[in-house]
Length: 108
Image (cartoon, rainbow, N blue to C red; front, side, top):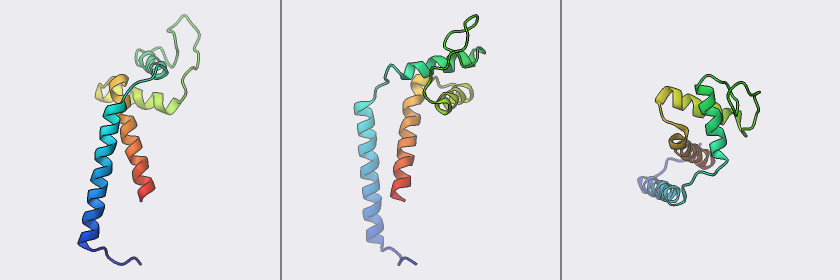
């Protein structure tokens, strides 16, 4: 069993956590961009929500799988359908949240 932490060590951990969070948000704002490959997923999401399924071009063309991650496409589609936030706006925020979640898992 680990000994209880002093209030001073908790304060240091809290300040370090806030510093990491501030640096992460600053870096995210400074280096934020969408690559051209992201727009491939966005097109698949758009076609899915318009009722054409996961296809690059709507019918009469045959479906072609060209996205990298099915789960990412489905997550973006769910966010757009439920919250009304289009993929170009939601993808960056979701990426930031997943990055912070990964960082939290590593720290814990």
